[in-house]
Length: 123
Image (cartoon, rainbow, N blue to C red):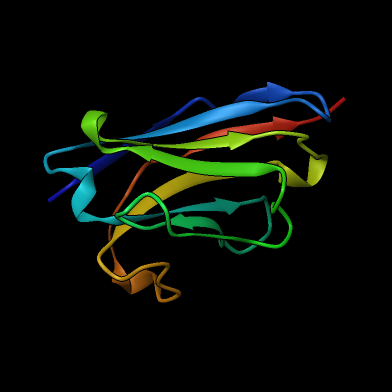
């Protein structure tokens, strides 16, 4: 089974940028569609963006469209999330998850989750 590990989180000022990485081990990441989720304090976890196995098919939440970009490099078993023009509302723990069903809304469809990485946007 694939294991996932996120990195790249941190603290930035509004308008700043961060790039998160989701690295897979134990299996090839190209066998999975990947979704980035986030969970802010006191809020439910929600999907941010999905990327298909092909690296071309993507789906963005309205709140991040035009600011965030997802990509993947299957040769290094990694999915990236580039976050630009960050806003305080983007503050959350970001997690990546692997599924065999593209952009699955049912969390039970996800076979593996990373531990999460904290993103804090504050002046």
